[in-house]
Image 1: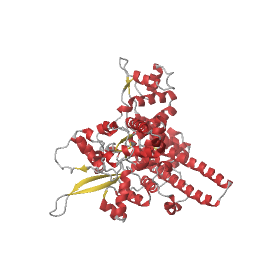
Image 2: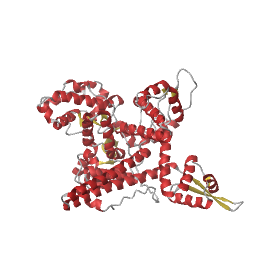
Image 3: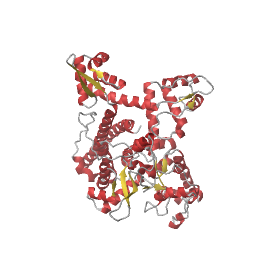
Image 4: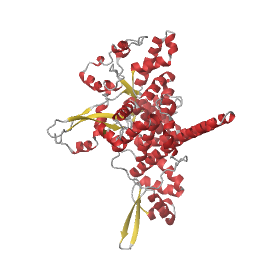
Length: 591
């Protein structure tokens, strides 16, 4: 549970007043009829400091509410107020945050430090013109990372992946990073020593620390953890008209917002991102006396040598008051976990739509391509030889019985065209097509549940063709009576699922209605409704906890045990529903 992972949560009683305002009933009815009005001042946010500018899309209204609620649950109302201000207003300076939130300077400063520590806010500096006769001044600005905030409710999924792959020892390191956001290597070692004091007493500290080092290296090599970004990168002012831009470069520059530039500037170089210093382990286990002076002699940055690399690390090593030794900080690499979950979603969809062998082959391709993927939203896999795919598939227990011809047939099922038979047979899978099919199937299932079978057939026709259809054509193609088809089309249109245009035929004096599905707007609406449902589930969970506390104060003996079991069963159902809903959210937003 999230409560077990995030040790820094405030007492739930602080939010009792706000929770009581929410109805206990959870409205999970997606696609509720309403008109969306997205505020102009919504903030742009990035899901990871390594993702490109195209992924820094606008956060949805209920996505912001869900993010604000998560921050309230973990860090309290004051931090949540600062975070919500950044989510709604966009990038702001320290003075602007104070003005909009009406909080004291100390409260705003502490809240921003907490948010940065837990990778929810990125700071950066820009040069702004001074007043009349004054030189330019450097201003620190802060932007909320909405996707990183939402990732906090996925910590159980991330923890499960690490536990299944590496076991309990690596899980302890990983859990510490989830709880504290950012830690240095020495802090990880100290945390391990505090948790296993018996080993230190028995003189096994050196061996235990060596095991800890090995487990830490495993997490880095798997790219589950990474170096933290620079705390406050400086963005050079862009020169206008410095050089002539081509049409291609102009298109690229459109996406380079201030926030996108800050994300790119903060990210460490790829050569440093997963680099563990040799000198970090050269001194073996830390001294038993935990002297402050000993840690200063551990040169974690001197081994880099190059000035450029020193400059890259300088901001992050100066950021934290508790890290006076300028140690390199580490954090969880959300991007890698999103990639793994994307792979799992693709394999699950392919297995359901085709067969288990196609899922085995696709999983083998992902394993072979793991180190070659440069970003999360890869549209196609890196081309692989048929022999390579076959060898990787044979490594799994399910794939040992496969033949080369069966693997080739599955690749054709997955949409690969058979190449001209030659010495090298290479295949690449269209992942974007698989994701699109999964998204369409999810929306079609929602339409089927809400509007019925006939509406499902009409919606599926429009989603497959993506062009305007006349009412008569829709009726004849889907075998639905024209009167019923027109009624269904108007219902879908009222729920903002369809776009309608009226054309007047002056010769016959008839009005023709044309219908089309606008996938982009519908998908955004579905995603916002999913955020809304997830928020309702989180609020329902808190409501049940508060209600159970009040009941347990009154009950005694056997009745108390019965109530605890009832609460546990209800909690499991709500948590399971939330995880399933989050899978759908990731399908539409992160994949």
